[in-house]
Length: 203
Image: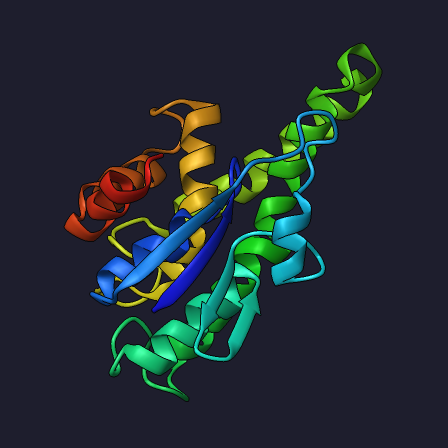
């Protein structure tokens, strides 16, 4: 049985959603954050020393990093689905977006979260952070102009990997600022597999 080790208030939805798209059996094991430090408990660090989530365990394999987990699931169980043909232009676009999601797009979102906790001390950083957010969300919104998915005409792992950025972008900016991202978020959240992931594991 595939295990997803999930730290509460972390980004594991992408993994459970993909598992539902692949119609795989899995179990989710949830962990509470330390009430004071907000860090992972020792039990999660026993699965992987970094204590980060999500962690996927499948047979003898233990994987961290959402992008690597998604790539593994698609390669191992996808039967050619959810990734473009290797060597095609779409494949390299897909590869770029898989890395972009956590490598560049998440940074301003995380900075906004952490700097907001500084109160007035963080105020000088807000204009630059907001500018970077607008830059990245505007880029993603433009990439969806005239299309439903970020790559090709069917759902790929890149869409799943970018889903959190899109959802947080719409939540922070409102539904009208980036209309293509809003349409994308509405579409993915209406997918039966996404709905099953929510019903089984909560928001």
